[in-house]
Image 1 (cartoon, helix red, strand yellow):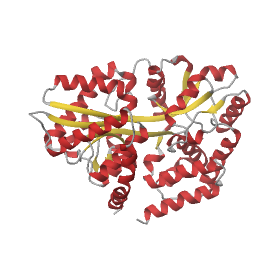
Image 2 (image 1 turned 90 degrees about the horizontal axis):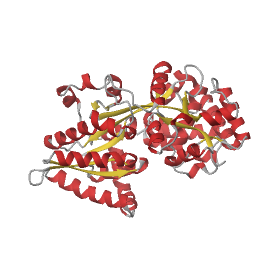
Image 3 (image 1 turned 180 degrees about the horizontal axis):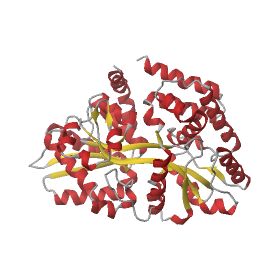
Image 4 (image 1 turned 60 degrees about the vertical axis):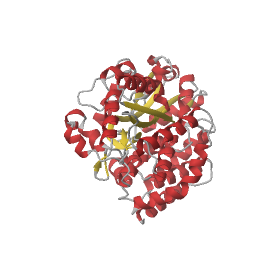
Length: 437
């Protein structure tokens, strides 16, 4: 029932959203238009003059690698043509939801696990790969943990492409300049923030547009005040979010906003730009995943300036974690699915991973995967996750409508329009509305 209502809502919203997307100008809008044309051809017949045509939507942060990979793949496989379209983080979410409502999903698309990928499995839109995985030995190829994260609504819903953990990236040189040690307790973390602010450095680079980047800090505050057991119970809705731990977390978030521990005007800024403050040295910390080492390489930054530490929430200092995957259209023919899988295997082969290492979230979620060269923080973060444990990142633990309620609360508190107790109540109201569907 929940899935059907989600589709019904999307059908109503599709005209408005697709109008916005379709009205975009420039390269992105053109690519989406071309992809829709290719998708229509692909879904209607699956081949043209003996060539199987398949479409792939992915993130524009990987475009420099994927363009070359797709070109080489098409040249080497004359019977397959892969057409790629690129979107930013939130653009791909919107584009896929619109395509879901109009029956124009591509043959394959990048997605995350949890509720984000679960929407497509729940509504019968993504291909169930359970039998394919058995027949092709995926249990011997991929780690069991990432395969479990790709199990959504009773099906294996995606080709695993990464297992990600988040940590606090920090500027070693800035910490050293002001005599700040890596904080081992929450109190030491607050002291570090105060010291940075006193010296004209923004403690934490974050951005509120679309909510998910600020959420990374808020969920760590909830982990601190709730502890691991209660936090897990909150995220499965077994315990009410309208509780003292959440109110305390939102109160501390409000305090950090008021003290100027985040960039000025952060509520409306783009989370894809938080790196600018860290790279320029105007901010000292940013909560990011192990892919950030690749970003540092891509932007030709000095890797020696950057380190990571687990947020000192208390207890075991668990890290937030999530999976990424490629999902496949449930309407794919066997020929189309085989073409898609052949491309995915080529995309993630050893040669391409080595050649374009900074455009992958490494190490790959394969058994006995190698650590990436020149990305020293990756091994440290994965070791911390193994030692400390992890929890599922909130926007994958939450269904979309509950995550949106949290994002709205974050904005309202930061803007002085809502008190923390009211925010906790609003989140619980959204949970109850979701469960009543």
